[in-house]
Length: 88
Image (cartoon, rainbow, N blue to C red; front, side):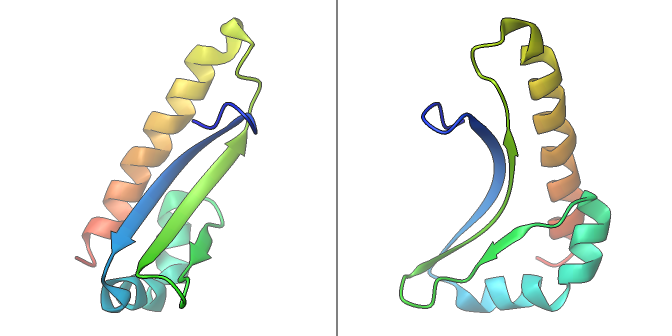
């Protein structure tokens, strides 16, 4: 959750393993098909970490939307687990 930009996200954070990122990237189309969205793939060659994330713009001040926001997060987190775990 980023309260400054009103974004919720699901993210794979990969520390010190470009090889793992590359393994995931080889299966990008299949992973995105399982997740059901286009992901933001950040190899970040100048850093020791990589990220693969999905963000959603939301209104964090809208108390009535919290349930839907949490449901989106859970749905996508479980989809990430399903999509990425087969390539570990």
